[in-house]
Every structure is written in structure tokens, then in C-alpha cells.
Image (tube, rainbow, N blue to C red; front, side):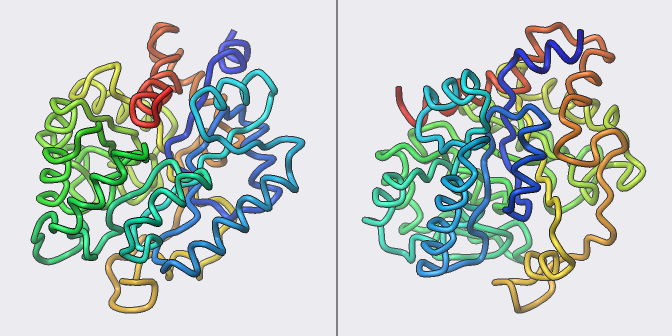
Length: 325
């Protein structure tokens, strides 16, 4: 029953930042993923980000037997029907725009669907969650939000500072998301969100995708897929069944140099955090293990309707609201 349920439902991962090559694409295909927010920019500036977007589009074309690019929620439905993985182009920082607002529309036309406003530290938009002082949303940040709202790009706040996040949530005319987060009530960590932060985004029509990145889990590298489902349930009890989704933050196949890159400011400067060994929850170690997540939800007694929502339908509803029909 589990396999047939997993095969039938729409499965969307709100963020994966793996090494983009054929083995990872095959893992997403084998795991039954319908669509994935694929990070192709973190610290990069405009020229480097444009190259990364071009490279990702090339890889989608070269692996078109199992991949297709997603521009709309109808494309996600088409990917499901075609038995392919839909690729959503996503960034974990807004630096790829180069502080030039007309590029927002250009990137939207290229297929950019989800953008995190800051990554860990401060930019011209606002502060990240590792800044010693969160100075809040800037005036330029408000202009950027206006443009992203206008063209239909989902705003992500996962690595954004608490004050900056609150001001973005209040200012944006479209719903925003924590695409990959965990509750601070289960583990205190700068990247985790307090109960009040989670309730606040939900009260403002927002969304929470739940990650299973081990440094942020209560049991760390000792966690299991069942522990992850418990964390998803904790968030769901705060934000509601209709505003909860999956955002794993899989880093599959990356070398140690990648983790050095993402844990230093701008990719090279001061050390922001130490992750230690990355061992994903038992039973959900790799992307191809996604059917085990559906099975764990069934084991916990979730009704099929709830599983369908959390595994993908809630993401679809949110993206349709932001991207437009």
C-alpha cells in the first residue's frame, strides 16, 4: 500500500542543494519526486549566478529522459503525468540579481521560481540569521520584494534573521515561506525557528517546509526518519495542516569543500558555524529513500489526505498563489 500511495501522490521537495549531476538526478527519479526546488546560487554574484543557471538549464536538457524544467504549477502536474522530475530553479540568496531590479523579471523568464532573501549574513536587502545584529529589512529590500511579488517569485526566509523575516512577512503582498526549517523548541540553533516565528508566518498566510538537516535535529546524527516525521508534526501543529511541507535540504554527493564554502561568510570569510559529520536520519539517508518518508507517515497513523498535502499538494497550492495560474 505504501509504494502505491507514494507513486500516486505529488511529491515536492521544497529545497535540495545536492551536487548537480546525473547520479543525483537519478536518485530524485528513483525516489519518486515530482518536483524539486534546486539551489543553483548561494553566495554567487550576478555573472556567476547566470552561469550556474545556464549550466542547470543545460543539465535539464541533457537529462531530459528523466527531467523537465518547471515554470508553472501546471508544469508540475505535467511532470507527474510524464513520469519525470520537475526542476524548479531556486536561489538561497538574492545576490544573483546584482542589486539591479530589472534582472528580477529576466530571471523569472528563465524559470527562477524561489529566492531566499539573504543567506546567513547581511546583504543590501537585510540581515541573515548568523548576523550579530539584525538591522531589519532595507528600503532596497522593499523594492526587491515589490518586484518579486509583481513577477511571481516565491520569497524564502529560511536563513534570514528574525527581525528581517518579520518585516518581510509584514511587507510582502504575497505569501512567503520558510522552505527548509526546524523548530527551535526541539533544538536551540540560530537556523531554527521559534514557535512564535512559525505561528507568525502562518498568521500571515505563509508556509513552513520542514528540513531534516542533522545539525538542526534534536537527535542530530542519531535521528531516524520517524524523528523527522515527529518534527514535521510539531511544525504542523503550529502552522496548520495546510501550511506544512517538506524541504529536506539534501546535500547529496557534495565534497567537504562545499561545506567549507557554505559555512563561511560570502563563501570565504569568517567562519559562521560548524556542522560536523553530516549523517542524515536512518531510513532517509539518501534522496532515493523518499518512499520511506511516506511509509513513516503512514506508520504514525496519518490519514492519506494529510500525507498528500504535506508531501506535495500544499506546496502546489502555495506556488500557484505566488506564481499565478
